[in-house]
Length: 445
Image (tube, rainbow, N blue to C red; front, top):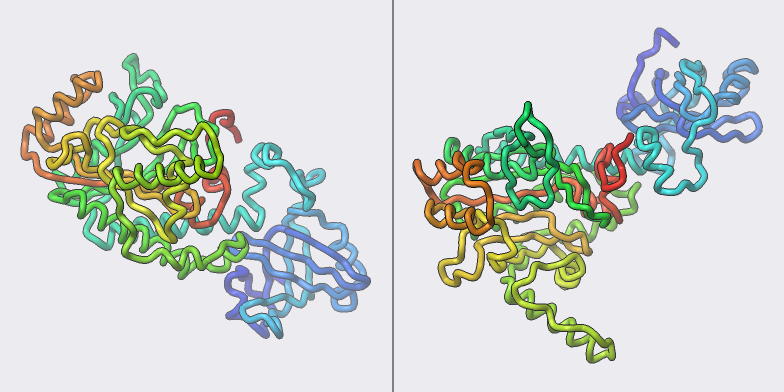
């Protein structure tokens, strides 16, 4: 076995008819008389190794019979193409070695387990076929994000994780001591990307962000990853165009490279194939009208206690689901009331009640995946906004310098990776979209 080429399962197609060695973990095993069907996974994929007692002898066959789930094994044999299933291969085993036995029974057996149990064993759950598929898709989404911006002249500028100020309100901050000073874990790198856009024209940051809101919904994590582009001399329309191109690029890349993983997840790829330009774009006012039509229908059907949606409130998760269900692709809602958006959003010159902002809602009820807009570029207006929101002016002195020295129109947005993975994979909860999720009641493993 030592003289045979050691290959990965992803390279099986190039070795059909040759005898090779594979090393990995026992994913599953079943036996039928004088045959063992050993499923080996090596991190790149899985392959069925068929072992006949007559080919390996009694001792090797007996040793293979005793091996337990997730033991580290080495199998040698001839690679064969499946006679009826294109792209599927198996190995006719001629040799076998146990390289690393397990100690005790593997906790995650083929039987059903509850979510809490699986989350407690997240470090092992990652080995399952489903979780493997999800994180492969996540990898491709992250690669597509970088390729999109790197291929369009953006410069990656890393934003700090420790910040002296809030970006989007103080109620969702994780506070920490920073050598005797008060600091916070970042909610967003956007303010720093505004500085970067003034230096490089087009910039983006990509890293972890933190929200301390006490939410248990299927859309929320305490720690998640976000990409935030910022572009000088771009307005709201340009921002929406960029977001539209960006989402189409990501979905196309996943469809191009991860169809086997989407098949494992039983994802309806037809719904992803519908993600094409142009995306529907409606104003907040139109969204309110559509919501009130839906509520009127409920009242007409005899449902009591269904008031109209009040103009001026932010959209909730149920509202977003109602609106996005009308379309087969992401929905852009723009020009929300300024009162429900962050202090740095520029007011609409045609209606000062509104902010030049946009939320992009994923279809199928997955909610907001992108939020952004045009930033206020006038110094005096921004100073008043900071005062109105009762934010500490000293913490924003550096930010106001961006308006003192060379201010210009600019815009950008943020995309949450985990919500995007949940949508593209068709997952019911974001907890499976990140290797080790941090939620309201979970800090381990």
